[in-house]
Image (cartoon, rainbow, N blue to C red):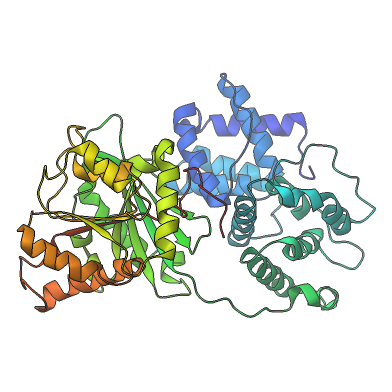
Length: 492
């Protein structure tokens, strides 16, 4: 560790943090540390202690291990408590004791997020096998080898950031990340190369670094834009009924999702449109996405599967409209994500559907009780049974009973569609046949078109009875599981 303090100065930092009321109690401190981790782009690992002072001492140790972490904590506390004298005192102490880091907050967070992508794309951490060579090449012979076990690249990147430039004026961190890009797989490698190029220009390197590393930094052909997914999870709050811990991710293609909102406060459903509007209009990573395509996915518990989220309205420049006519909106099952026992069937059916999505057979259930539950489960367990259409809404979610919809999810069916207000069997059969007749993988976008038809007067049953106003679509990609759930396989 390059940044270190003597015992007296570290004790001053500990006391300054403890004098802030919200940081003196573990439970409240955890909320701010969660925000800090999101700001940093990685976990802040340290051994926690029962005694408050020892716990904060360990926290300060962790802050000193990561450039900019102490400054980031001060920024977060200033946001929460802008007029606090104790927060101001901590700010002054951090300014006195710790130098300004080399990278700014946004660039550092971007790098740590790229490192996280790399580690998640390689769950076995096989990339660490080449780490000693990359580290030695970056630091040169003047620095000793690391004598500790390497478990993550985050602390290594933090260490390299604090190392001064070598004889040629090249920061070791840039050399390391440049070489790491050569070992990283697509699509992480182009992003790492781009990050290095931008840092070299921003810090006014004299061109020698760019010349020496031109083969690795040469811009590559841009890959085709990937689909963007705004994922909203609503997890039931254990203490307050009818409130939910809401977490939001932005996921690009099959990359790991980046967290946009963490469920620290339990929200009523009435607050979801407000959150959606903020994410869709103000969140930089969403607004600035490279591809205009965006699918909104709601990860929901059973009791919420029938909620008409696609009918929620947002306002843009004073124009209010339903999100379901602007974006494809689909539902995913939170309970199934948490139920590892059904993942193999779910994954197997999704794989089959991915290769046979044109004219995939559909299991149509038009009447409640049409099948005995075990008979339905047996029927849906066939490999080719991947799409389930029901003319009626789920009824067992609130009381935990088994209904046809839940049987379908337990059988691993990845695509389930139903009419929320119930439907005449013959009419629903016609509507479902038209909706599901083509490539099932394009169903989210066709469903959006159906919702548009409902408001433009097109199609059967135009007006309030139009299926587009009452259709719920579960479209559950078994290969794209957002964090924090266990990924079923490494990304393609």
